[in-house]
Image 1 (cartoon, one colour):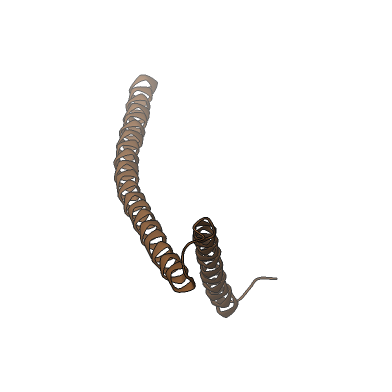
Image 2 (image 1 turned 30 degrees about the vertical axis):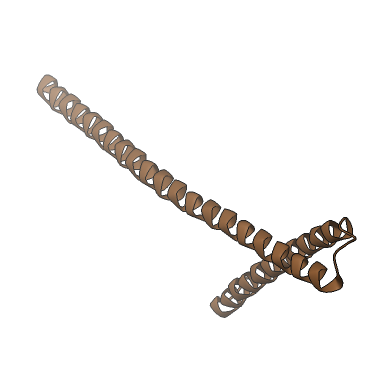
Length: 124
């Protein structure tokens, strides 16, 4: 049974929701991993007071999240650049292929027309 347009739109909306939830869960797992690293760092520094340990943990988490954000933004930017380059190259290759097919079709048609004209002349 074919799905209606409304159902297809709902599925697309659900796909967006699933991707958003997945992104949130990945970000949360990354944040938790960074916090564990900060806690391990503070555990190796037993002379820190509780306030100092919390301040160091917060600072470490902020720095690591900023670094992660910058890396992700750089990756996204590079992916966009590559996408533009590939799309441009694909468009060029597609246009060249279309020109070649058109030239080939014209050659075949003109050859067929020539052969037809020759056949008409020889049949007289």
